[in-house]
Image (cartoon, rainbow, N blue to C red; front, side, top):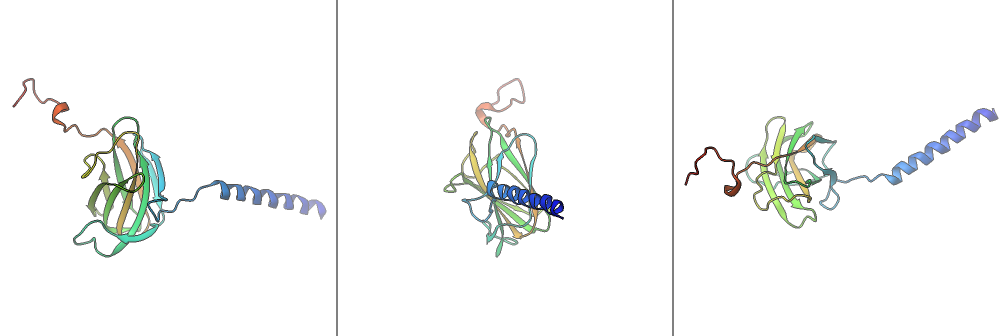
Length: 182
């Protein structure tokens, strides 16, 4: 009897110590505020995906019009750009979440609105791309916070991937012919 109880007590203490180390050593992110977003890290050319069981809080949409009224689910996600100037493409796939989607991107300290887009509803989610921000250009080696709003909160997934931005600057545009046109 004593030999049986001794390994069981040792197993219980070891399990408890491992559990406490995991609990105390692991950060648990809340998506409820801009100050404590989920961290997706630096987005590369490979797809980075994260699933959310439910949004962290409720809040109003940054958009006006049909499908954007009332309070919906809000999730905050931190993402960073790499060393080269890349745009970040986000695919939002709804699970139990439904209705219209909207994204507002803020600077890393949440003081400056960088971009806002009303995405509507494609039936399976929405796509947000940082290629042409409405307010400020995104910079390489920088971090931002995306506030993702959904009309009917629930579970969803976000996949992000860095992509080469479209070349639409006059000074560096890709030529379409050998002669310069004026």
